[in-house]
Image (cartoon, rainbow, N blue to C red; front, side, top):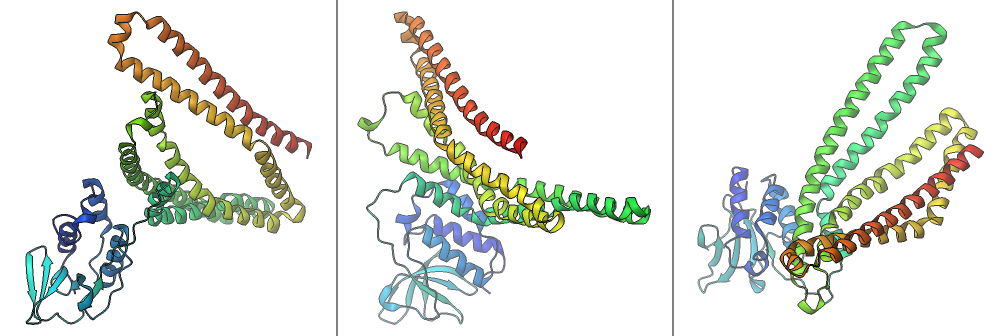
Length: 384
């Protein structure tokens, strides 16, 4: 037993992330929000759980993956240690008397020997890559940090899709068993069962919504921190002339975060589960009936591929037009006194109207591209 309760484990973790001097060069970069998130992730004080938790933590702090053992590596100090009935310490020196000096939340501690089942791990910093981290890697890293919550949400989505089959099977059973025979008892049993399925589906949807909201909140904190940090590192000569446009681009990370969340659910749950639905149609409706959704699936992929570039270009144009419009608004507010003093309000108004028309035209082009896709699919469906 390492700790008697979870609060003691969190006190050690808070010390490790805060005032310790052994790894302070790695923890100083952590802001208060990140520290709070790490503390929230510590949910158990079991010895095995603590080992796995600290392996993941030190990896996120740019240390090589910890390998815990029962023996201390004297030649590779400092060592990180999890000591039973004491907590976590950093062993940084061996004296001439064979004793070990360690730093803990209570200050410097001298160990003549270590208790049984103490676990030691070497601390080695990862080699710093000289390559700059791309925006894609940044978004991917933050999303993977929430993979546990996304897995739970995926499991909830799988359950929702499974329960959704209940209403279809209920209708089939009513027509096959109840209507021909007038079996009221069977109807009552089926109705109770389908209402239970609908209730469970509703509760699971609510739970999934809570999970995704929590994951979204944590991702928003990470994204906003990383994006603003990258912005502060931009050289002054590299900044765009229109600060307002840059403001709009910085705010658009919300769209990327929403896409990552929805795309993860679609790719790992909805897409594979669509195969299960198609198989269910084959089993229940026969081979010919099963070919109908497969045909529409192939048609949708073809139409989407044909119009992909058109939709991408229309989306890009509408985004740039919106950024310019927001840029003009921000710069007008910032320089309102100069605009009034120089009488430039008429020119600003003309620019505003021009950008408004550009946004409208870009959105119309985007809408028409989507309408073309839907029209093609509806036409094919009517033809079949």
